[in-house]
Image 1 (cartoon, rainbow, N blue to C red):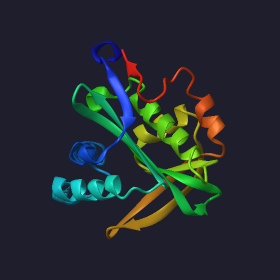
Image 2: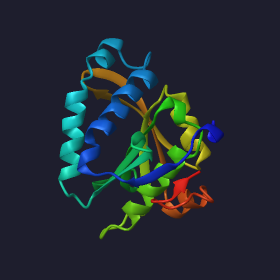
Image 3: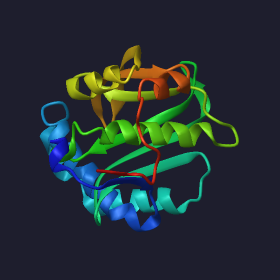
Length: 195
Protein backbone atom coordinates (compact mmCIF):
# COMPACT_ATOMS: atom_id res chain seq x y z
CA UNK A 1 0.00 0.00 0.00
CA UNK A 2 2.83 2.41 0.80
CA UNK A 3 3.91 2.53 -2.84
CA UNK A 4 0.37 3.53 -3.85
CA UNK A 5 0.24 6.47 -1.44
CA UNK A 6 2.07 9.55 -2.57
CA UNK A 7 2.55 12.97 -1.06
CA UNK A 8 0.91 12.62 2.35
CA UNK A 9 1.26 15.86 4.30
CA UNK A 10 0.66 16.03 8.06
CA UNK A 11 -0.27 19.55 9.15
CA UNK A 12 -2.16 21.36 11.90
CA UNK A 13 -5.90 21.45 11.21
CA UNK A 14 -7.68 24.72 10.52
CA UNK A 15 -11.32 25.80 10.72
CA UNK A 16 -11.78 25.03 7.02
CA UNK A 17 -11.01 21.36 7.70
CA UNK A 18 -14.07 20.72 9.89
CA UNK A 19 -16.23 19.11 7.21
CA UNK A 20 -13.46 16.84 5.92
CA UNK A 21 -12.55 15.76 9.47
CA UNK A 22 -16.22 15.06 10.17
CA UNK A 23 -16.48 12.95 7.02
CA UNK A 24 -13.43 10.87 7.98
CA UNK A 25 -14.83 10.43 11.50
CA UNK A 26 -18.34 9.38 10.46
CA UNK A 27 -17.09 7.04 7.71
CA UNK A 28 -14.46 5.54 10.04
CA UNK A 29 -16.97 4.94 12.82
CA UNK A 30 -19.38 3.22 10.44
CA UNK A 31 -16.60 0.92 9.16
CA UNK A 32 -14.70 0.34 12.40
CA UNK A 33 -17.44 -0.04 14.97
CA UNK A 34 -19.85 -2.24 12.99
CA UNK A 35 -20.75 -5.09 15.35
CA UNK A 36 -19.35 -3.26 18.40
CA UNK A 37 -21.88 -0.42 18.55
CA UNK A 38 -25.54 -0.88 17.57
CA UNK A 39 -25.99 -0.41 13.82
CA UNK A 40 -28.93 1.95 14.40
CA UNK A 41 -26.59 4.32 16.24
CA UNK A 42 -24.02 4.23 13.42
CA UNK A 43 -26.71 4.75 10.78
CA UNK A 44 -28.07 7.76 12.70
CA UNK A 45 -24.71 9.57 12.77
CA UNK A 46 -25.04 12.88 10.97
CA UNK A 47 -22.22 14.53 9.07
CA UNK A 48 -23.69 17.96 9.87
CA UNK A 49 -23.57 17.35 13.63
CA UNK A 50 -20.00 16.08 13.48
CA UNK A 51 -18.98 19.04 11.29
CA UNK A 52 -20.51 21.50 13.76
CA UNK A 53 -18.63 19.85 16.63
CA UNK A 54 -15.28 19.98 14.79
CA UNK A 55 -15.91 23.55 13.65
CA UNK A 56 -16.42 24.53 17.29
CA UNK A 57 -13.22 22.71 18.35
CA UNK A 58 -11.16 24.23 15.55
CA UNK A 59 -12.38 27.80 16.06
CA UNK A 60 -12.27 27.83 19.88
CA UNK A 61 -8.61 28.80 19.97
CA UNK A 62 -7.94 26.50 22.90
CA UNK A 63 -4.30 25.97 23.75
CA UNK A 64 -5.28 22.70 25.44
CA UNK A 65 -6.27 21.00 22.15
CA UNK A 66 -4.17 19.87 19.20
CA UNK A 67 -5.62 18.59 15.92
CA UNK A 68 -3.63 17.43 12.90
CA UNK A 69 -4.78 16.23 9.50
CA UNK A 70 -3.22 13.91 6.95
CA UNK A 71 -3.68 15.36 3.50
CA UNK A 72 -3.09 13.97 0.02
CA UNK A 73 -3.40 16.79 -2.45
CA UNK A 74 -6.58 18.57 -1.40
CA UNK A 75 -8.09 15.46 0.25
CA UNK A 76 -7.96 14.86 3.99
CA UNK A 77 -7.45 11.13 4.51
CA UNK A 78 -7.03 11.08 8.29
CA UNK A 79 -6.81 13.13 11.45
CA UNK A 80 -5.57 12.93 15.00
CA UNK A 81 -6.51 15.01 18.02
CA UNK A 82 -5.52 15.28 21.63
CA UNK A 83 -6.05 17.50 24.62
CA UNK A 84 -4.66 18.36 28.01
CA UNK A 85 -6.80 16.96 30.81
CA UNK A 86 -8.22 19.27 33.47
CA UNK A 87 -7.62 16.52 36.05
CA UNK A 88 -5.18 13.64 35.51
CA UNK A 89 -6.72 10.24 34.69
CA UNK A 90 -4.84 7.17 35.88
CA UNK A 91 -1.72 9.29 36.22
CA UNK A 92 -1.88 10.81 32.71
CA UNK A 93 -2.17 14.55 32.08
CA UNK A 94 -3.16 14.42 28.40
CA UNK A 95 -5.43 12.34 26.21
CA UNK A 96 -5.22 11.23 22.61
CA UNK A 97 -8.89 11.71 21.76
CA UNK A 98 -8.98 10.51 18.15
CA UNK A 99 -6.89 8.93 15.42
CA UNK A 100 -8.76 7.95 12.28
CA UNK A 101 -7.31 7.17 8.86
CA UNK A 102 -9.38 6.13 5.86
CA UNK A 103 -9.13 2.38 5.42
CA UNK A 104 -7.41 2.59 2.03
CA UNK A 105 -4.62 4.70 3.56
CA UNK A 106 -3.99 2.57 6.63
CA UNK A 107 -0.72 0.68 7.24
CA UNK A 108 1.39 3.44 5.69
CA UNK A 109 2.62 5.13 8.91
CA UNK A 110 0.00 7.88 8.66
CA UNK A 111 -1.59 6.96 12.00
CA UNK A 112 1.84 6.82 13.63
CA UNK A 113 2.68 10.26 12.28
CA UNK A 114 -0.62 11.69 13.52
CA UNK A 115 -0.05 10.24 17.00
CA UNK A 116 3.53 11.54 17.09
CA UNK A 117 2.59 15.07 15.99
CA UNK A 118 -0.28 15.27 18.45
CA UNK A 119 1.96 14.07 21.30
CA UNK A 120 4.75 16.51 20.45
CA UNK A 121 2.29 19.43 20.18
CA UNK A 122 0.76 18.60 23.56
CA UNK A 123 4.20 18.33 25.16
CA UNK A 124 5.04 21.84 23.92
CA UNK A 125 2.02 23.51 25.54
CA UNK A 126 2.49 25.98 28.40
CA UNK A 127 1.52 23.20 30.79
CA UNK A 128 3.13 20.55 28.62
CA UNK A 129 1.98 16.95 28.61
CA UNK A 130 4.27 14.40 30.15
CA UNK A 131 2.11 11.31 29.56
CA UNK A 132 -0.70 10.40 27.19
CA UNK A 133 -3.69 8.05 27.49
CA UNK A 134 -6.00 6.84 24.73
CA UNK A 135 -9.29 4.99 25.09
CA UNK A 136 -10.49 2.31 22.66
CA UNK A 137 -13.53 0.09 22.67
CA UNK A 138 -12.21 -3.19 24.06
CA UNK A 139 -13.48 -5.18 21.07
CA UNK A 140 -11.58 -3.00 18.58
CA UNK A 141 -8.73 -5.44 17.96
CA UNK A 142 -7.22 -3.34 15.17
CA UNK A 143 -6.87 -0.24 17.34
CA UNK A 144 -5.52 -2.26 20.24
CA UNK A 145 -2.87 -3.87 18.03
CA UNK A 146 -1.95 -0.46 16.56
CA UNK A 147 -1.35 1.12 19.96
CA UNK A 148 0.55 -1.92 21.22
CA UNK A 149 2.84 -1.73 18.16
CA UNK A 150 3.76 1.83 19.08
CA UNK A 151 4.64 0.87 22.66
CA UNK A 152 1.43 1.87 24.48
CA UNK A 153 0.87 -0.11 27.66
CA UNK A 154 -2.54 -1.41 28.67
CA UNK A 155 -3.46 0.63 31.75
CA UNK A 156 -7.03 -0.43 32.50
CA UNK A 157 -10.15 -2.06 31.09
CA UNK A 158 -13.44 -0.80 32.45
CA UNK A 159 -17.14 -0.78 31.75
CA UNK A 160 -18.65 2.55 30.79
CA UNK A 161 -21.91 3.90 29.50
CA UNK A 162 -21.99 6.14 26.47
CA UNK A 163 -25.12 7.53 24.85
CA UNK A 164 -27.16 4.87 26.65
CA UNK A 165 -24.91 2.00 25.51
CA UNK A 166 -23.08 -0.29 27.92
CA UNK A 167 -19.56 -0.81 26.58
CA UNK A 168 -16.11 -1.87 27.77
CA UNK A 169 -13.14 0.37 27.05
CA UNK A 170 -9.43 -0.26 27.23
CA UNK A 171 -7.12 2.56 28.26
CA UNK A 172 -3.64 2.47 26.74
CA UNK A 173 -0.95 4.93 27.66
CA UNK A 174 2.58 6.20 27.50
CA UNK A 175 3.83 7.27 30.94
CA UNK A 176 6.41 9.46 29.23
CA UNK A 177 6.13 10.98 25.80
CA UNK A 178 9.78 10.09 25.30
CA UNK A 179 8.71 6.42 25.33
CA UNK A 180 6.20 7.16 22.58
CA UNK A 181 8.51 9.18 20.36
CA UNK A 182 11.32 6.64 20.85
CA UNK A 183 8.98 3.96 19.49
CA UNK A 184 8.51 5.99 16.30
CA UNK A 185 12.01 6.38 14.84
CA UNK A 186 12.22 8.08 11.50
CA UNK A 187 8.80 9.74 11.73
CA UNK A 188 9.22 13.04 9.90
CA UNK A 189 7.89 16.25 11.48
CA UNK A 190 4.63 17.95 10.49
CA UNK A 191 4.88 19.79 7.22
CA UNK A 192 7.05 17.05 5.69
CA UNK A 193 5.51 15.38 2.68
CA UNK A 194 5.81 11.59 2.75
CA UNK A 195 6.70 10.28 -0.69
